[in-house]
Image (cartoon, rainbow, N blue to C red; front, side):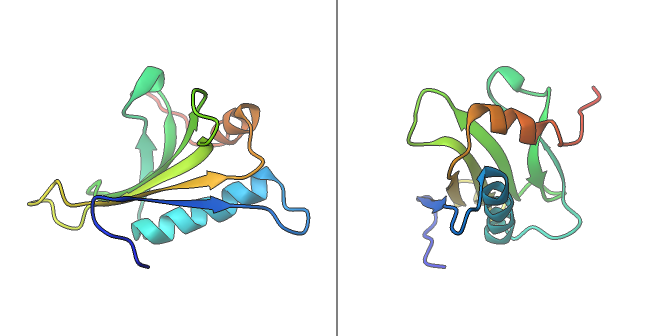
Length: 125
């Protein structure tokens, strides 16, 4: 994979042959799950930062929270726009050692971001 610890790895999922943002999201989500090493026993990830902290689910994570991904939108940085962040912390005894990355989703807009999130499980506090 060529990914080094503590350095963010950035990819771009682009459409080819007419692929649109939703298909690009599905490809990016699948790639993020692979890079994070998620298995079928993953659980929803509750947003930890920003205005939606503890309010909405935005991704999936492992039961022990050492692996996961989340959908994100950065309105202040067009180079990021809609993207998926993924992470993998191989050793909880060394919390500063982690693998992480961002997968940009080509053709996705803020409206598409909100539409995708509307299909995620709802958080019931």
